[in-house]
Length: 334
Image 1: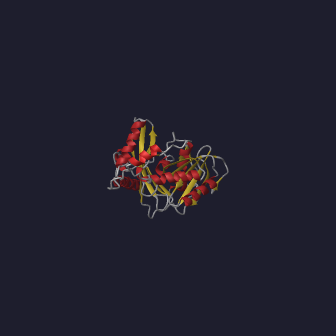
Image 2: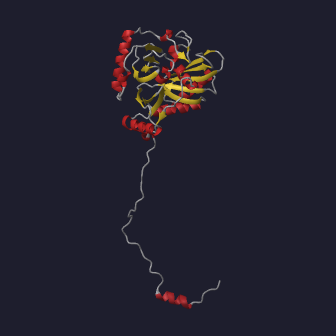
Image 3: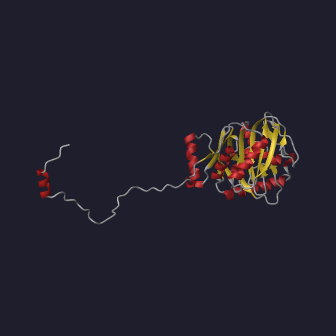
């Protein structure tokens, strides 16, 4: 852990498959009050994740501050759809249609001036709900989970058009941006690259190329083309000299080994900015309930079924003589 004992205003967390990073954002400006990094032994084990998140909360010392958790598991990808002017019911219909046709239950609304975008998230929806529940159990307040590319975009300058984030050896992503708004993002292979690291580019290209792409392979191929162009026009260096922007100010620079270094905490800082509400309205990820993940209900209507073929026995009742004798006998008074 690193930092002072000042009071912060929000918490940002980056959750990876084998570690958790977190920052406590200062009350004003771009000050990182505290930063931490905790190893995660088993991402699929609830107790392991809960233990790591609890340790992060203890290191940051933020029991009453809003928290935002960012993650982008390997294999995830994200695209956007223009929904400017659509009403709430129309958005719900669109979400249901996207889930039915493309198996994407998670969406996120992002406002960009007069434009509004619906970001479609292809990631493990059930796992996202699980992480949010575990963060609440760990003691974080007002927890919301969002994609790491969305959190990262908040702290980059307007000129950045491509961000390659190498979070761990097994989790890396490339995000195409326009004026700090993500256009698309995909998981990439970070084998052989130094991590954690952030590589930025500002090469210009037409973002309309990404419209109407609904297949992961096609999106990955297009982003790879942008990466190659950007790599050819910029120097591929670590982000130690790249400034993160928060609330109009620049985040102080720290060496790569420092827990507050930008290549370590860029996503966590962006998540903290979102939790503090410094970039407009805070919108949570909307996840449509997955019918396949619920317990199936067997519909068994009632039916009439013949259980025997033997005719029922009919009682003939008392005989004539027996009824005559019963009439002659005196009745006992009660």
